[in-house]
Length: 95
Image 1 (cartoon, rainbow, N blue to C red):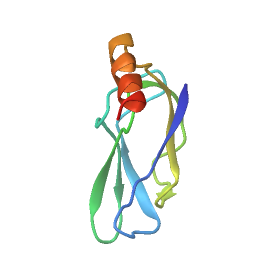
Image 2: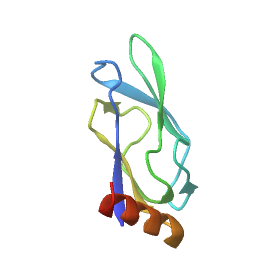
Image 3: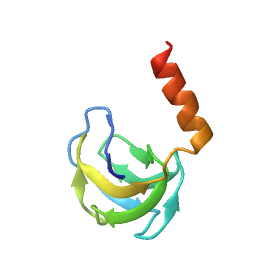
């Protein structure tokens, strides 16, 4: 399943510039892994992955100006292992 990772709330900074990119198309990433660094006039912030999987498309380049909700990259997400899927389904059925 393809999932687009977006810029989270970055403290209201509009037009934060991409100053570092840590991943490339084809990389396998983990949840919370740093993807990019954005810098505003107030601070620098690393944007982490919210999903694990393989990067299939990079939506940013160095120097791009980003705001909350902008796309960073697309990931082909790892499916849940069967035992975790069963646990999740059981919790949904029996809250």
